[in-house]
Length: 135
Image 1 (tube, rainbow, N blue to C red):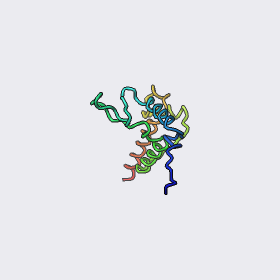
Image 2: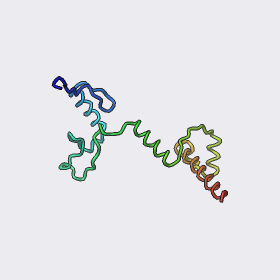
Image 3: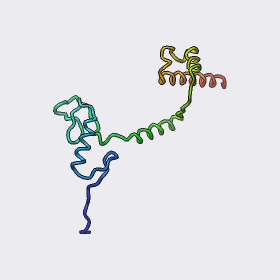
Image 4: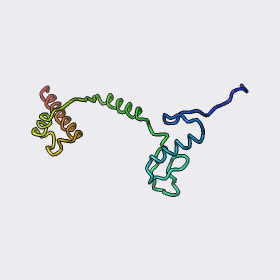
């Protein structure tokens, strides 16, 4: 076992291969620059409590979840809640119908988020009517 030699590099950090300690420090410094500059970071990645005792503990940038992990978490939450994500086309006349029916504020008909909320309100109303009709 004397011939075994541990090699630290190359290694993956946040989806990036680093070849040396200098590259690792540079990569982590770049990630730290992307954090909120109002929150001072130290080597362990947490706010320095002596400088700012009221500071909120934030994770080091290398500990942040990847976008794939966030998508998977949302997918699992939807599965637990029995909900689905559906993408579809909606015409201007259908958007106008949502506004006329009161599911959408007419001044916000150009905002995709508001149109999606209006469709959600319509679906909620249909679900409630179906539940009362079934009883």
